[in-house]
Image (cartoon, one colour):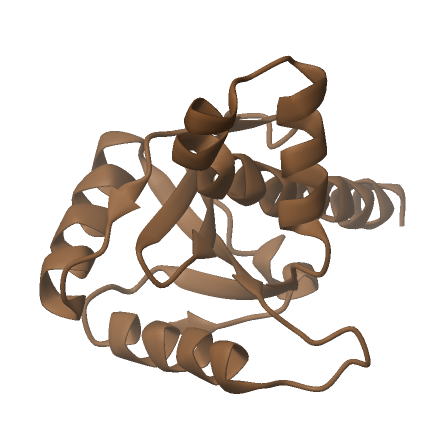
Amino acid sequence: MAVVSIEDLAGLLRPGMTIAGLDLGTETIGLAVSDLGYRLATPRAVIRRKKFTLDAIELLAAFEADKVGAAIIGLPVNMDGSEGPRAQATRAFVRNMASKTELPFVFWDERLSTVAAERALIEMDVSRKKRAQRIDSAAASFILQGALDRLGAVLRASSAG
């Protein structure tokens, strides 16, 4: 299926399926999963990156365990809106995943998601060492929550009209 918009995703969702949020780092993949009502994002354990094939196997196993029907992936856009090497690497990751799964992916502008996640963890008085272990999944949670909020608005608009 590859890449769809958040608006198109609303029509592709099936009952009983969740949505995953991904924060693709160079060393880890942060993972979060929605509830069945698509209202709340919950962080999951990070996936330590090895090489793409192994990362994909581990990610798809996590998707299966959580009955994931779609994935929101943070797109690291520069503050001026341009895309650099990290955004290109994220797009390449999704292109490679398209050969391994039929799940739709949605790119989501992740500007400031890591900053917001770090602030939230500091406010919860999480130690520096534990913050380092949790930051990518917390960022994935922020990415997914933003997308879920937008998806909720899309679903409400489509049921009202």
